[in-house]
Length: 179
Length: 153
Image (cartoon, rainbow over all chains, first blue to last red; front, side):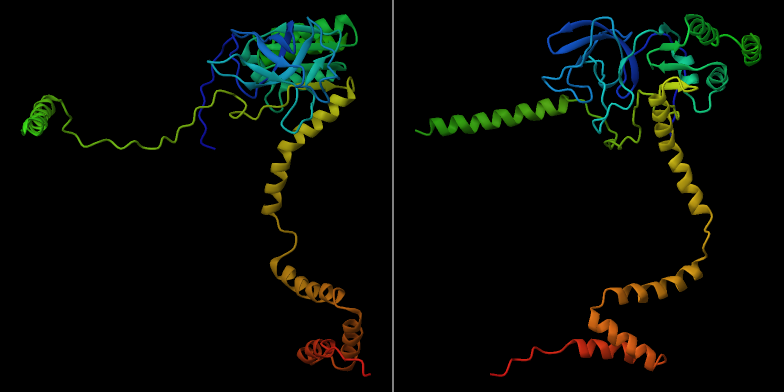
């Protein structure tokens, strides 16, 4: 209560502490991975910041992997740091995102719309076919469905949702579910 | 012979004069000092606090059962707050009933924690006289407080 915020549209992401984002591993530097999160700097992720990771039991992370994690440190003076573990030590869905699937970029405003509770787009899409979805606050979405075609359909709908009205969207989905 | 002292005195005088001159030249506001109020404004950069955003990882129609369980868990955390509010609104049991039940409850659970002798005594008393509740309460306690009997040699 008593919170005011300015809602603006932007494409460029600025790392914020506590945000869950999708990062791409660009380099391994000793004990730390460098992740590209779409900000001005690559974020760092320690190999111990995974559930059940010890010095001997290292997570199997390769360059080019997708990681879903949250920021622990994110201010303009320091390099952002990420972890794949929450405050109680559990991963709760964070970590390496599996094989296959499709990663694409949208504007930040759409992400916030999609993450709103009871989002219509998500509800309508979920009626179509089984699929898995990961939304990063940095504007990146990862989709995986059973076939490549289904995956691409979902990607196209999500990308187009930015500019379509609700009616157009329902028409498009009706055509698809008719197929 | 008083040179050093004189020097220090003259130095002090000179310093004081200098200070006077300097302080007169200093600009100062004729306004009373503004107290720094505690700012009640907290700056928050994340949208997480503003809107009730759902967890970012989702799965539909059983594609990834672990993530579906996670969705339920994460989203139920938000709903728990709603459920608590509902309970406060509707009281199924009125306050009077609660008070009545509580009275009898205390008695029954209190009996449970009495030692065995007291329990037997309580039962006898209850059978004998149900009206004099005060007495029945005090009698078992008196009987229970048996002093230690020294074994006679």
